[in-house]
Length: 166
Image (cartoon, rainbow, N blue to C red; front, side):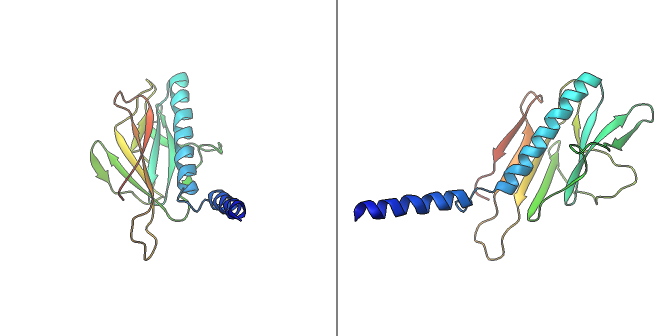
């Protein structure tokens, strides 16, 4: 009898873990991983091509830009499915702090886009903190899960930190 109860308990735990009900936010983790991968790829391209890239965060999403030195302006990266404009999944919210100052995210469509996060051809990064947060559920006693993306102290690598006590 005890063995049957143990087997049922193990099966219930396995089902719970496979359904992700324990608290992992796969949508948040996927978006974090996507941002890190794209920024890493663009940082490599910046060094190889001696070009400056950037990320522009806007209300509800983000896009990657490249600096056109001949025209002295930032332009959207078009024609590449990796760097296309992205909308955050439902329930995710982005907050941005640049050089220690909170940034009010602009609307998605602007005439002359400019990045808030710079990926320099030297391999360095501008100073920023990007927070991805799951919006509060109605009636929830705690805030949603959140993660922070920022450069390391040398401003050369991206690191992530889970935000505790939200």
